[in-house]
Image 1 (cartoon, rainbow, N blue to C red):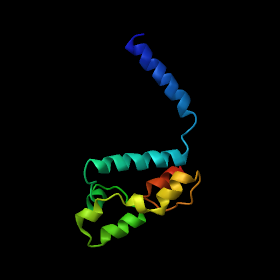
Image 2: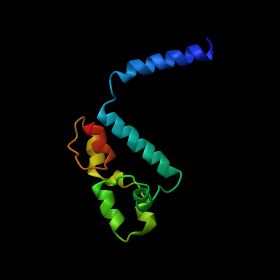
Image 3: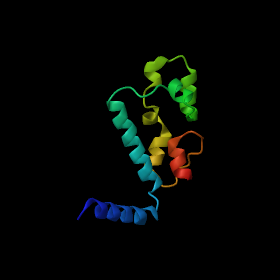
Image 4: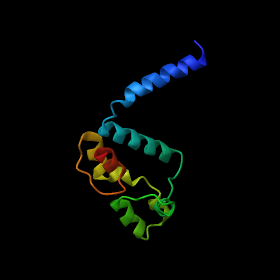
Length: 109
């Protein structure tokens, strides 16, 4: 089998999978794992820097960004201690409604 045939088969599999979206709780678990993996290699982008790029912060991150806590706390993965993560990873229709929260996006799309 040549590369082109293999890529066509992979594309066909992807088209079939796209018909049914992944469950929100699976998306939440994958997101948590990716952010955790990113934080293992070094500090995350600070909340102030993230906000400066135009990205939305959740209400919890926005409150921490407003505090004089410094870069060390501001570049931690705050989702690890948030109840939205815990609900998002365990419930298919988690009651998370605030803007800027990735878990809310997964459950309200």
